[in-house]
Image 1 (spheres, rainbow, N blue to C red):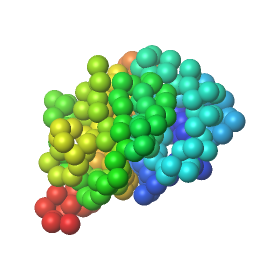
Image 2 (cartoon, rainbow, N blue to C red):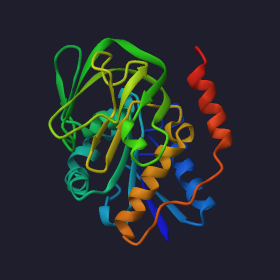
Image 3 (tube, rainbow, N blue to C red):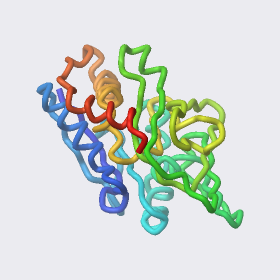
Length: 246
């Protein structure tokens, strides 16, 4: 059994240790005896959805996002949109989250089209939402997994969810999508988006396992639930972040 991961634009999108999400996915697979292959796909590279079980796109500053914009929208856009509708698993962080949406509206009102792979829109604001975050993903409880998600956010965009898109979680601490409606991130089909950096998955092993299991079961229908791991060290770190006033 093998988990095949596509890392979109690893040389351009890697804010606040976002690459650590891939390290976590690979390590949690290896601990279970599951092979894991990570393939970098950047400017000028082709994207064939059938080659992968999971696609990761991290966050980046405006400069980096502008560099990849044409390649993402014009060259890879059709394939990514089709892959989303086909149920391929995606994890998109911050800038990657925004790029998956319909548009980003700058502070002067100018709109930059996104991929339109999911129905979300983002409006730029002069003030930023910055700090450690605590969110609750009730749907993880339904799987017998810990629903509390911790992370770190730093974004000026305010994102609003459209038709058919549900929030990844509700906000207990932090700004979340927009600082107003208590939503954080987005889920559409098997696309999971969040504003959480820091990295997201090392702090949230239950979320990492959900992504691994979802991706594997899509390719291997006979795949059973993942075997449990000893996550005591991760849980100690989570408890500190949840209980501290930092």
